[in-house]
Length: 173
Image 1 (cartoon, rainbow, N blue to C red):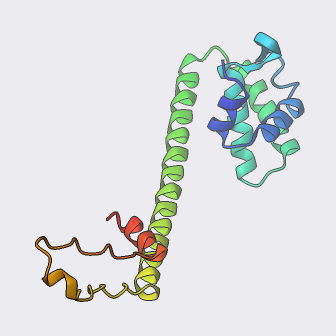
Image 2: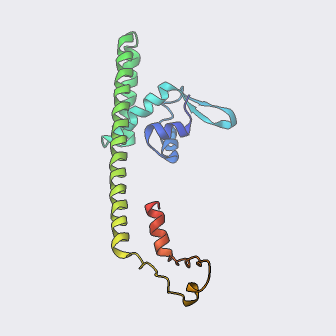
Image 3: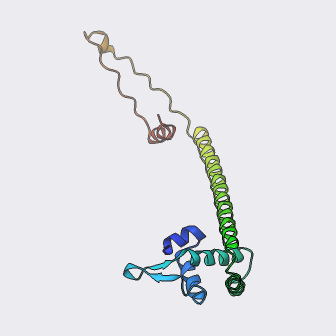
């Protein structure tokens, strides 16, 4: 059984989009929608298959009403040829292949997004390098009293600007 969140992840839709399809396809999904604890909407695997078919047709550019009509015709033709168990296995395999294709496409899109973000990070590092020159190293002033004392005084701490600290933080120093 799948809830709304599961359907969103599987179909790549938002919760309002899934809820709208559930209400619009109520006559197709009548036996596949169940209520769980606290009136949670649950869809069985057959209902998920119907929603996937509708989503597939929508991705091809058909309207929701056209998708509904096509899927309804497919379901009636399946019921008339229900005695053939091999066709259901083939359809499950086709669904698995389509799901794998969808996941591979999503991975390709994510890889492209990661590549673009890495390019942006590289450009920002380059901007930091060109825009924020390193501060000059402070040279301690010779202290005339230091020569007469027995122990040398520790060198004064160099003051580091915020920009330098930011740059060091980004570089990981």
